[in-house]
Amino acid sequence: MKNFVLFLIGSGAAFAAPVIDCAAMAAKNFGADVKIESAKSVAAAANLPAHCEIRGVIWPEAKFAAKLPVEWNERFQMVGNGGWAGTITVAAVDAAMRLGYASISTDTGHDAAKEPGAVWAQKSDSNPSALRKVIDHGYLSVHETALLAKKMIRTYYGADAKYSYWVGCSTGGRQGLMEAQRYPEDFDGYVIGAPVLNLSGLQMKAVYNWIQVGPGPTEIKPEKLPALEAAVYGKCDAQDGLKDGLIESPLACAFDPAKDLTTCKGAENASCFTAPQIAAIKKIYDGVRNSKGELLFPGFPVGGEAFVAGRDGKKTSGWESNLIGSFNLGDTFFKFMAFDERPGAKWDYKTLDVDTAPAKMANTSLIINATVTDLTAVKARGAKIVHYHGWADPGVTSRMSVDYYEAAKRTMGEKETTDFYRFFPVPGMFHCGGGPGCGNADWLTAVVNWVEKGVAPEMIVGAHVEAGATTRTRPICMYPTVAKYKGSGSIDQAENFSCSAR
Image (cartoon, rainbow, N blue to C red):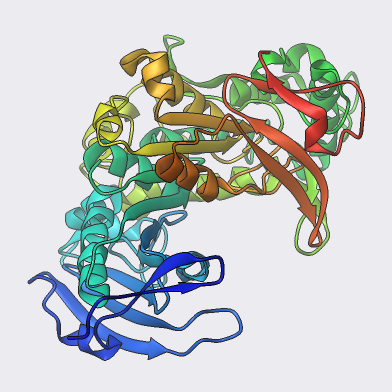
């Protein structure tokens, strides 16, 4: 075995070199449940550094891909998934490796191409590991993959990583919070983006919303969405003192569909809404309530109605794709995963009963929801959490993050919480990016500086980027402060704003 080597490059940062050949990793014993399928050296290319790529599976079906750069910054970064997972997020692994991190990703134990949606959770003779797949998806595969990555790092470089980081958005945000709640020893820093932390509740919300405004007499068709956007932004945009296409404090805007939408007086058209449609829209903003009027899951803050250009240049409302996309996820959840007795493909979404569903989902919820608010073990080991969520997220309501953060502060104390955990809502940002806001931000550097240098983030500069060009920057302020214009200078430059109380 070669000696452990440190060498200096570029800025003078210390990098570690491997102590064994990559191919030798395939023969190493990383545990009885781990099968290494390949280990190969990959030469440096225009977009990737030289590295060792290791692929394999953790019993029963959790596939992983690890990439260990030859020039290593002595840090480990694990990256999360999106949707129902089922794929290895190689692009995020590559992004981490370009920065010098040893990185890994797991598909969480199922193959989305072979088992689309939540089909993989359906119990059958041909799927004997169904329950274990739910547990792996819920929390276990991420933890086991993190432990495996640390073993591989120790073997390949001859030393442990000095710091370990989690980076993920959406499902990846939920996975990171789950790690903090169940296995706080795994990571030193967390970037938690738009976490689907109450996963079962979110799926119930998705189906509930589709019942309200999907096909039927109360359907909100795409041609109605410009009128909805105009009403929302007409009421809420300027409340922060600037009419700039951004709603800085959505919860501060008292948008009321019954008062602020135009009711059709005669024939229905694209610029007006029928009384049943208005009542349905009100339910979307209000949240899921049972027959007693008790709130079961929070509704959407205003903002996600905005029209933005997609990759094809066509402008669409955030509501349009997210309503149907969220419903599709929720529909497959209830068919194959939510209940102890899986109804399967025969389940009809119109039969959803919000009075009985939470209790029937209880066992699954315990496995997949990351709702524990006591994170004192994270603080005790000196770890830090940077949590962000787009205020205008039309798929995963940002109120879920707000409610969780407020509950964490009640559980642990406000100062005790902000000493290690800070939340940054992003005005105008959709789910994990996009939208009219300034959601392009360096969350990783913020948490690294906090962990390694003790520099706690008060605000983070975000950018709005179109066609590769930055058109606006704004401060993303730590909750509950908001960005306020100083009164002079361009409203498209972050330096002309400050973070202050609402």
